[in-house]
Image 1 (cartoon, rainbow, N blue to C red):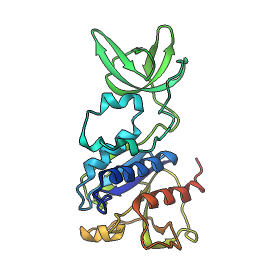
Image 2: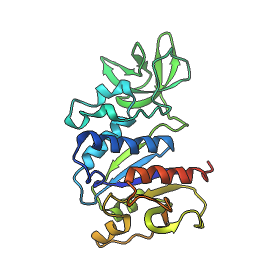
Image 3: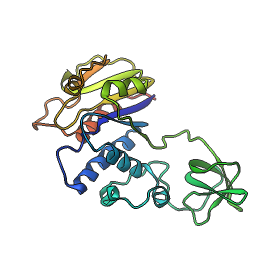
Image 4: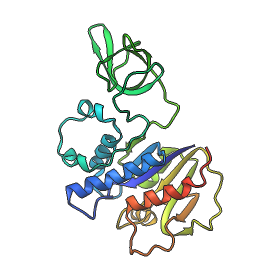
Length: 258
């Protein structure tokens, strides 16, 4: 089972403060990491912050020791210090290398050989030809050698900036189950839920426009499997998108079986 969340490019429309904007996106990154979300999709909803949202989400997901290599100095990252650390399995601290250990790295070519920065005191020689960011398994400590590998545990999320409307983005994602969140939806406590399996998408609206309103704005429709109110009896006038993401994933985490 793979969880995906869908957020609008108008997520930040209520604030111009760059620090708050960065923090709000960081909260979504943190929620996605806590509950093992594999894909975050940023769909077109009349906003102008899609690229900014994508940059912050990808920066948060990248292990700290790789950020200087993968992210040049840019104004979008001026307040990156307010992003909460994810501490997911691939965000490893510096330690003594162990044979069999998986580490995220950045591979590059030097002469006829390939090497990788995997966050240790020395670079590792790569057995194989690969460049750029990748996951590696340590196969030798002295000398330090690695091979490309595929993790079996949760290893972070991928960000998709589609520049497409919501309905088109959902179709592109190829979901097995699509769940829209709405204050007007069915109370999640009493809803009959289907079996949770395959690719499951949780869809969120913007601070000013809900999911169904966003579809109407583009004269679209989408056959959601469920439209749920995941924050019943809310005592505030609105629930912010980053709050709805955390609340929704927490609810479904109780019934997740995988």
